[in-house]
View (cartoon, rainbow, N blue to C red):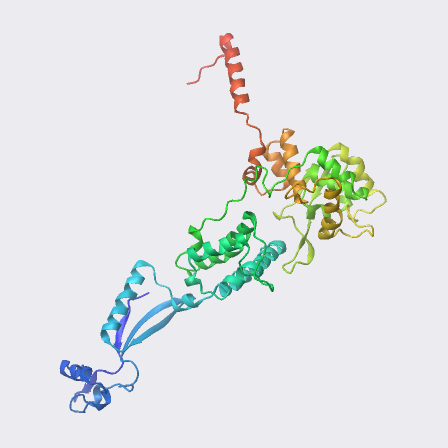
Length: 444
């Protein structure tokens, strides 16, 4: 943005034309200007004191002094201005404006007035590659928790202190929500992370990237720390073999018991299991091809889509599951669902969770395990596999994580500490090598 400049709205240069047609611009004299400034009513100034050719068409109307500047808005250059009665006030404003431009503090008019709701709408319109389930969670958290507090608030006025107060209210259950009550149950650290860092934060990061914000106020906010996922936190539950079998044993249908075991001993997501077809099971190799998942669209309606990472994968199942899985395929076509309702239709995951899994949890006497949910069976697979000696790449491939780093970040604490084992092995091999000098080699 170029520097600002001051315009006198009431005075202009007179124009003189000589005999050859050349023009000369003549500014008002200092005496004329002093007389104008001294007048309370500028229109009472005589023609002798200030000839008409020095007066603009708006002479004596409105505020005399105007500060003009250009700013960029959505890729276009726009003229902005602010008017003042006194020159000293205009000069002060111009100086401050130039200083803001030099220091990077300046924000254009649209950005100062742009609300969080506007930024949120723009952000969501651009999420063409976001999966329906993720978009649904964004919309849900924005609508329920974020927009009731921030929707009408201009982005430029959001401060770290305001966000801190909001986070505290989310914890205590007194933050506004979109339903007809003033309170909601206090939220867990993981829920707050999803609402504040993901839903709210994604919009702020989008706005900051487009320079709608001078600085993202969320950058300096410390969110409540979730309990370590590798400990017995409320987000991670690991069942034992006995607990898995107890869940399966109390189900009414053999197919439901098989699904519980399949989730716990193979690790797919429940949506991936619900989307499986008979043809995707290879009993000779004990492999299942995961290529689709049952998810929801942006409105929360069920639909079938690609797995979370967008990539297909093949997972292994233990031999003790072969007979149970084979029984599910008997008498069915390749295109039939592997896990299905009594009517042969695709499982409704939400219904199965409420009708079968929760009932099994209570029936197995596991209702006192805080945080136990269907997804816990996937975590259970990871813990049982790691305890059985699986390395990080094996667990990553089976679970379908994007990369090994994600697997390590999630389950690092489950791998045993092998420092002593490595040190002891080095001790043994060194002793053998020293007893047999010919086995030593020298490298240059």
